[in-house]
Length: 207
Ligand code: GRF
Image (cartoon, rainbow, N blue to C red; front, top):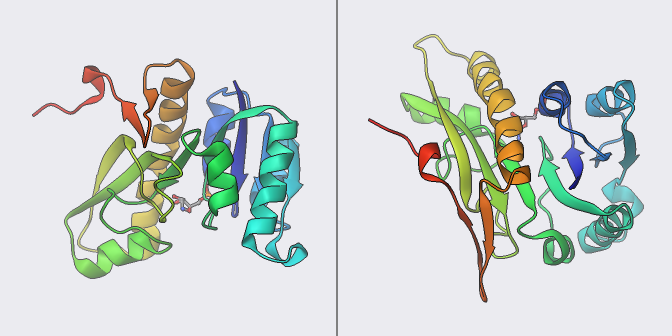
């Protein structure tokens, strides 16, 4: 299955996928000059930039982006630090074939500031989540959960130290989740009204 990775930032999660040996067909950024584009170039992966400012609205940009991916035969879209909410035209085409990595144990702390929010709340544990994005789960950081990894907070954590440890967890979790999908071990179940996933027993936790 052909894979595209959507990015906005430094691309350390993209790098984790590359280092894991997962074949990536395209990298797309909504930010020109994002560090992730350099990582794509270094790995010889085609990339493109779809900046919001070049389009009339979000829907127009997302339609162009979806058509670009469809023209390349992309079957799975990985959101690796992609910091824009995808709109309906994109979700109607790729919903259920999109995975997102998020720096918290969802459903706690969705949004763009998850490590800071966890620190401010004073939780003892947060972590990383990889989940499916479907057309029914258009809200940010919602959708059936594939894998999660807890990360303990330390008494002297700053947002930076905490986020660094969460990212270490993300870098292990994201390639693992993508492989599970590619191998068909986590099945995406398309029902008449919603998309769910079937996660095998050995991926559930034990006491
Ligand atoms: C990651 O922590 C991701 O979960 C969050 O933004 C960060 C992106 O980092 N949404 P990178 O671009 O993969 O280095």
